[in-house]
Length: 228
Image 1 (cartoon, helix red, strand yellow):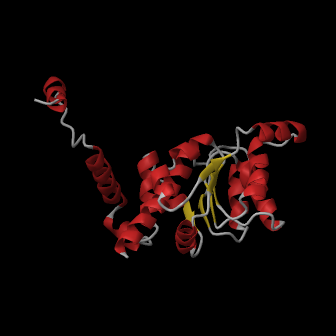
Image 2: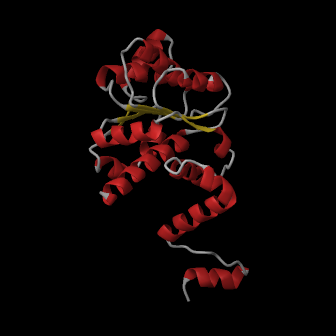
Image 3: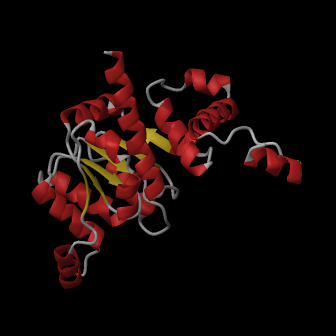
């Protein structure tokens, strides 16, 4: 008798599975089932893995209404990943959540500058947020990049400004900060930037959502490569 059988015997609760791969597979089956066949069949096929992974991360089905994909963004994301451009994030949590093995398989490095001493110093001197200063550092070091923002709307605001100034040219922006101050406005600003983007409109989001979207795109790229 294994530990799950003992637990079932003690509690009367039967668990579907405890094997990691089976748990994830069953979770995605449940998500698609709850989204409904009509929704799943009508939703763009290439975008569905991204939406499902966000729901898997959050258990929040409202993302089926709020997660926005700009026209052509999935092709742009695939090309960016194929070319191996770095992924920049606004938080160490988002950076930590990105699957490094999947990123490295495409030659992609992952960076977050929020804790760098020069960023801390410049933010204190300028009275700007470290997230905004991190975008400026990214523009100097990696103007050709994927930028994933899960926490700081000021990162999106500065990103928009630097795009207009042609100092940074992200291949893709993942704009999913969470919160109440400047969050909705910053996301809507990014929709006007003319850059391919995936944005969680409204107040919801988070570093875990930013990482989930990055991982979904990386896994999708791996699947496409295996088909070739």
